[in-house]
Image (cartoon, rainbow, N blue to C red):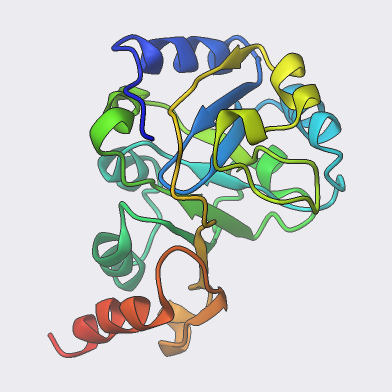
Length: 212
């Protein structure tokens, strides 16, 4: 069952992240855990809470597509077109990180950026006003199942976080991962993990761009 977030949820999440904290929050797919994508100390704390290998990258989530496009001002036209076609939505897009932004999220591969812009509707809509990007990963222990409900989030994550937001029961399927790193060079793209957005839907959306 979905649960509406408080009107101040976005402000509380933004304040937590800007102060260097770690937060558990609901998304359009599963529960996530997040922190400041430019704060290495906060990232290390998040990784420790999850038991996530230090070299493994996390995605950077923007809570609106407009914010993402404004911040990622070195995207090429072909990449921007795909972002408009697929986002907001339950996908993680791997992009060429030409400016080497968000090093704490990218870890050992500074040339790649994982981008998320969730589709926030219904009870999750208040989060669309967060206004800042976050380093985010699923709110589980590394390698364990994703959390559909807040009670599915491991206790050590809930207790170790500075803020916990309850969005009720979520769809429960993680995002589809689409690799766009070769898109601008030769038009190639790849679905690396099929998740909440079916492969066929990705193919239709990107294929429609080629026909325009």
